[in-house]
Length: 168
Image (cartoon, rainbow, N blue to C red; front, side):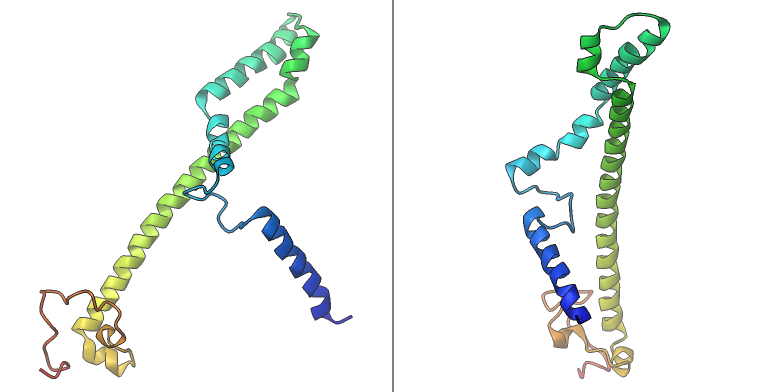
């Protein structure tokens, strides 16, 4: 069996899963599209909230510390509240959810900074082409005015380009 035939079914199954689960390139959309997505977006915030962590710590004291000290906790309370492994794993989930929220917020902020940095670099590049048009043409670069890129903007100073390279 050729390798191309073996790779095709795996690719088809990946497409099938993608259609089932939706796109995975951005799992934290800025604007959720459906009602369930908007509801699920609040789960990490609720898990990592201070009141939820305080309630879990109180539950930990009730279910873990009090039995160690000698206070009897009813079996129904343990059944409903869980045991020490449940409580500690819930607190760990809160820490993970808070860390994830922090990382997502940092990533979005970093993305905005990078977009601004790219815009400034493109503007600097455009200005350098404007100022040093002869050198840009010698390097084989096509001026922005010829390609139409940035044609909605005026050159710095609000006047058309004049100089030895403009033919004026």
